[in-house]
Image 1 (cartoon, rainbow, N blue to C red):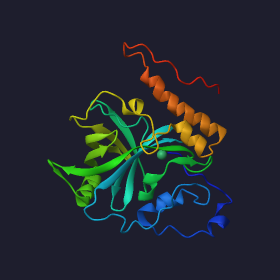
Image 2: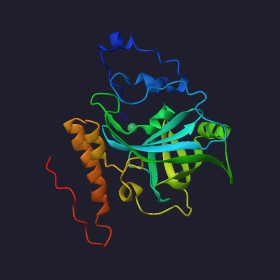
Image 3: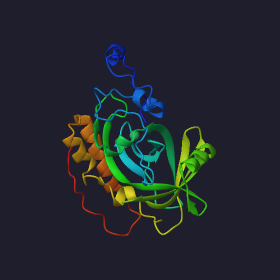
Image 4: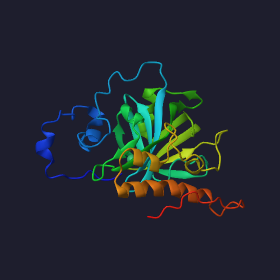
Length: 255
Ligand code: MN
């Protein structure tokens, strides 16, 4: 969600790199990143990435950039449509979560878990928090890419998710320029339990944010922020709403 950094000395170095601006809907993604610095994948031609008849992929990445948020990405026409959800997805149909539309990402990004260097766009720790397959929904049937185009234009996307943590029916409803609400439908997967609290670890590696940060050589500040992103889940877990005794704090680190 951070703004792209303006780097005065960037032009001469960038001139030696391949011009990626041709890559249509990934042009904004490419423009915001310096691929000689960040470990994130460059956006290449999205053509031919999706085999016909294969289910569409979705991913949710927990990302401690300037602020902690969860990036929801839905595969559509060779790219991952993306929304930054500050509080993360809620499985409670009564809870509407703000989802800020961000630039489409390459499908390769679904595999990215690590640390974006300090000072780079979105600098901080990224975790693959959930992933699976998705389908657009039209009435009581599954839709196709044309339905997604239509629903995007209308500002109301109905979808089914089948992931490890998120499942069932959902809606994305546009409420302003690049501003949407993510809402869980009432179905058998609806619950008041906050999945960001009950299932905080990586679905790809089972690691915490701190473990990802350490393994990827995060800066001391990034490591501190990653640890805080883990602890915020634990705090919410022992929030005083439940009558259960508070769980013992597992972390006693000093920072
Ligand atoms: Mn992000």
